[in-house]
Length: 365
Image (cartoon, rainbow, N blue to C red):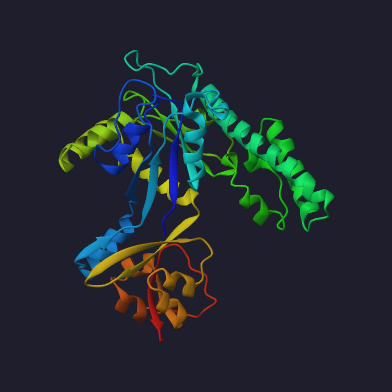
């Protein structure tokens, strides 16, 4: 399952530095001038999960295979991108190919790193600039779609009336300067709305790139208020410079630096986990002597669908699943302990998978 998150923001906010830190290597060029990145860089990132390590230790697995997601480093957008400024149309097309957005904002001041022309004076203004460009691009596309649908209405084409009502509702929201994600939808409208592939309807995770001096003591709620974000919005404060430096450190040096900042782990780990959750993913595990593996699946998958992620034969010939919660598996030191304590469940085709399930699938084809 390949799901992509696009790193979006104004030029020189630290997108490429963050991307390199995510991949733990120098992939994207990072330089002190706008549009250092033109073509998007794509990389696969492992999702940190201590549960997988614990399972591997219990079973003495030869290797561990974590869940992964893809990040895409997209060139900086500028004011006027929706009208083609700064190769805006090309960069907006790159965003359209992603499933969600990591909107990186500059929360630091450094006279050695220039601010792109047209940037705001605060992170909140920067956020508004980017989001307005997404809104304007969507509005342009929806207005053109409305015009096209008028001929379908005149000819009495099937579903044209329903489409017209949805287009009108969507355009009204966008014209008011609001993200398409705020359009009120009925269950019947949701499938059609998804087909629009609107930029401002994509799930968003905000990253605030702070200075080294600020990262150790961060009030997330205070920053959300300054950015004009709501309670349900996701925000991860981080320092791309520190994250980039940590890549080259030894394990002991990394721990020492994090401890000096009052951190138990790199903030980028939390960013990856938030991105994973943003995509609506949960994790189930398979574990044995050869490997311990984390499998990403969408929330709501049944046991046969989850089994199909391993192999289509597992879904086609599904009989039942032996399921133990990860917490029980670890606490009771493995399958035998869980079974003796009555914590092993036999689940059928209707079982909906829960995050952290440790599974053994029984099938016959």
